[in-house]
Length: 154
Image (cartoon, rainbow, N blue to C red; front, side, top):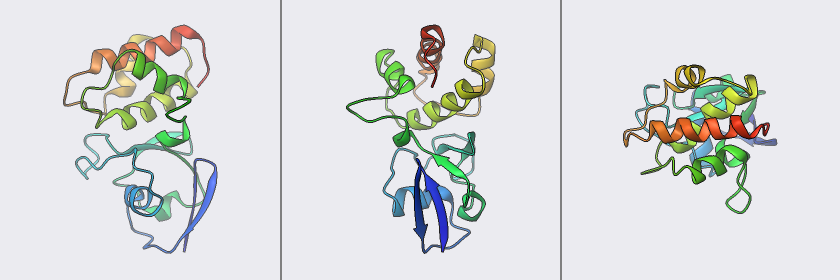
């Protein structure tokens, strides 16, 4: 039995402790925001936050996440009431195909929690591990900068 705290809720799952966190989130908890991209920690589509740090959930075994706070894009807001970063990504039309966006938002969330006033270079460096095949990086950066400029804490 593995105990995971996801988006503030405790879940006791009868799963293999070596199962990647991504599979537990998607297949057992039906949280489908994080996507399977490469399975190698090279694209960032599966990025979630564990103990307030961005992680590639395709690489992290559930046993390593047990007892730690896990946050997914579903924990930031809803379709009816998006969180500040989610709304900024919508407003700036930062998604083209949308596959990478949940991971991008979670990596940006971790940055803004640690540093609410990053400059453009800090944003670019922090976001570098996550890839967008559609090439909307400039709109993603604009979305993050708009949250910074608004002064809203995430």
